[in-house]
Image 1 (spheres, rainbow, N blue to C red):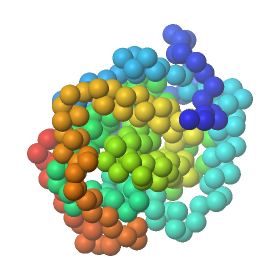
Image 2 (tube, helix red, strand yellow; image 1 turned 90 degrees about the horizontal axis):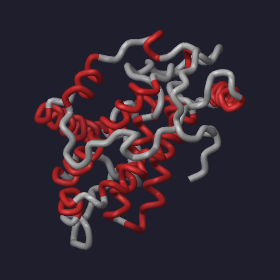
Image 3 (cartoon, rainbow, N blue to C red; image 1 turned 60 degrees about the vertical axis):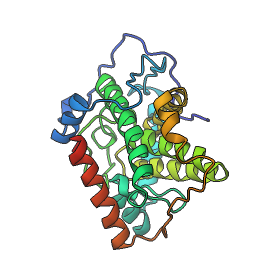
Image 4 (cartoon, one colour; image 1 turned 135 degrees about the horizontal axis):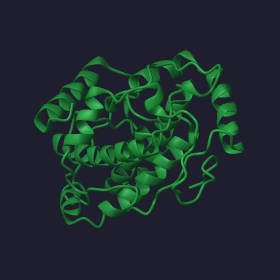
Amino acid sequence: MSFLFLTSCQTTSKKDSSLNFTDTQKWGEEEDHFRKNWKPVFVDLTPEALNLKIDPPREHSQAFQREKTYLLALQGMRSEHDLKEIEIQKHVCGFYFDGFRLGFNRNLDNFLMDAYMDSRLLGFRAKAFYNRIRPSFSVPGLTPSIENPGHPAYPSNHSIQATLMALILGEIVPNNKATYLNSARRIARNRELAGVHYPSDSEYGMSLAFAVFERLVKNKTFQERLSEFKGKKFKMVTRKIKTEKKDSNACLNYTKSYAIKNGVW
């Protein structure tokens, strides 16, 4: 992994004096409920447990100035296609991996979502610790194309979750692993393009996803469930990348039922 914006090493006890998330926004009701109530399925992790606490660039650092320049340049590159894709990808049903999406393989979907939710909790714990402000509150002239989410910016949960899902799918279809990871990178970059994440949010999210995956593959329950899909006549259902209403509805219906069953949304 090549990191262009993360330049800090281990977190120190020093706090930046600039504005943070809770100076400008509040945690969303759903997000707050989830982080207080989700019971991990495979792994119960914190950045400390992963030995992966890395500070985001501080407001007056050269790294942060590069982030500001980058985000303002990206803003001018948004196309209509980008905006549609960004809107779709606000929800996990917009996560495409070489045509794969949730909603068509119930056992695989549940497996992926359980890991997804464990990583979501890790992301929220890290977000609460770093409490990083969203870009539009600290980068003059930056206007997000979607509403700012109701939780801190660092790390990007889209980056954590999409990368982790890509790594798991890569275990099931190894020949497609690189393609899945490219899809995950695109999902993360689209959040930068939308103006709701700094690039260092995405980079830290990716590094956390790889660390989570390393823990997952050592987990007995995870390996047992993964074995249901590896080395057998299991075929994932893939769909056209173009959004089709029936496909979208199938995914939304699935995620809604998962959320109700697990009390997460």
